Image (cartoon, rainbow, N blue to C red; front, side, top):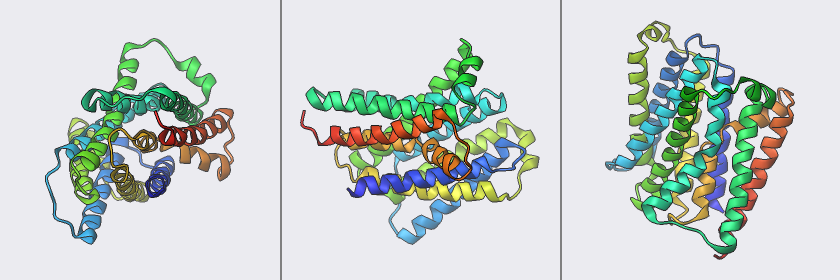
Length: 297
């Protein structure tokens, strides 16, 4: 059970990262993201120094950092256009991207009762993330009212879904297939994400003037380091590419909205039916996926 404990610790700190973003007073989102990634990279170097491991080259980890940060770029662009409520819910389907890519690359497939339990757990988990995301962005009514068959928004949503699904896949491959330790994987992921953040800043040069130390982005960046470290440790404990544990971790990797919604419901008392449904379905989905992992095909 060490893998799920590490995964849940990672999810908790992803939640801290999300809450820090929620309370950020930054006037420029691209400048704030640069501060987050800079703090993330500094934290990565600190953890690597503490771990005292030999740094190995990891293309998979570098790719994970790049695609993850590209997904963030698209989300920030949607936020700047006040269209986040349409784009962000696509994150709920990133676990399906993970499964599809894993099936294509490693011929992973599930049959019989395991497949039934997997589909049930995946449906619940994805629905949970979707409702939590919608609940945190104005509610289902607002989502339906805002939604239009806009090709650009559809492409942006699908791009985020693919980017963050690939993030989980590359992390899994770095840890399970390449056997790279979590320290090495974290460093190269940090290099990739910081590189994209700097490119983002170059594309939006007006944001450079807004660069200044801010508490919320710095806290968010360091929380992201801890979250990523424990999630990478969890992936390393799954041992095989065919394990349903990887599917659960892919869901948790992109499930930041779940602890943020719990925080909003309990601490901020921002009650919403969508949030309650989202949290309940997500927890139930993780339980069902754990059953799927234990069931023989």
